[in-house]
Image: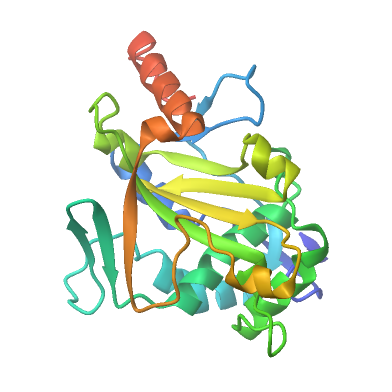
Length: 268
Ligand SMILES: [Zn+2]
């Protein structure tokens, strides 16, 4: 299909692009993983899906550009590695990433949020970047965080990562690691009144994006939230009990219930 590529803006043959990178679906399907899609309202039951949404978004060159520059680094972040320089080490109450490349990792997760924001698929209707989308696109293309000498894109869109666990053991870790929660806007009231919060979950890690206006540039630069990923080469990722995130505990409880009610049915 010929259309306008969302990244370079040229009229090109468009590839069917994934919003959440394909490698996560591959690893989820290999295990007992089911893709869990939750809707932004409380009446709709969560849906288990086994297909990954795709749509014509990017030309071959731009798809390759994002893959070469960000996905290769980003998708291995949560995977065990023999390379001692790049390791995920589980230590007591946190997971440590060694050899963490902040800029590339940030741009990688930014590219996933951006894909969902420019997508026309109905499930991403609540995900939008409005006026800052052109700046995001520019950062992705230039592989930079700087918008000007004072302000960076990560001052506007703050990235947080936590490892979701269930201390009660009711939700097995294999389910948490195998499930993919698609990109969503948070139901949380504080987020909707002061900015926005978007999240998705893969490999047991919850990725959170916070867009919150601040009264001054100085505050925008310095304000941090609890799980925000620091710009360092060694990063500690906290564990977060699933009970602290109602949106995830509800959807996981529903997934387990469905699996128990229809053990023969499998994902829809
Ligand atoms: Zn393009």
